[in-house]
Image (cartoon, rainbow, N blue to C red; front, top):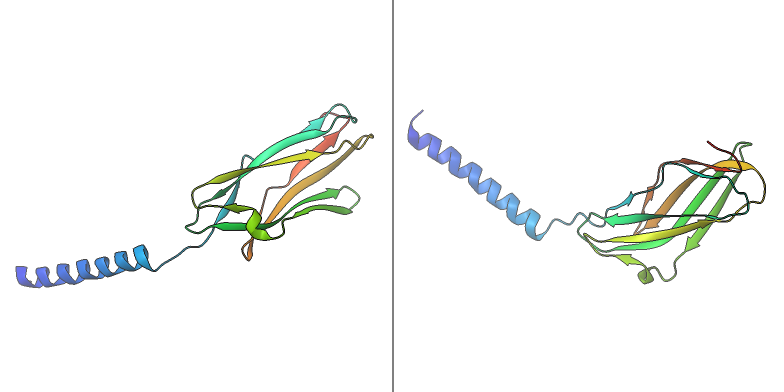
Length: 144
């Protein structure tokens, strides 16, 4: 093929790349994309009368503001029972995370006053989507 053919092919490819770049820069929106960061790996307490406190972060890696509707901490016990502790935010515009920002979530687990263990996970509902954390063990009154 001659150099003129290669020039035409290259100009078509560059034109397509320019159109796609313009589209992604001006019209394409990913929306909010929350991720959970620094969620603990495990929690344990030797004292059944002391509350356990921890925190984690919600990071918005998307290109639009995320409006958090609710945060649910789900406890699953060894006997198969589950308990959900929900924090509902109403109206949802009260708790928003801008693109590229993160917010710290502080959690206090009340002491059960007896030796017990369960698993804990967090579900965060935001702008018609949800994100779920990893499930971690929580032990009261004994070492893991």
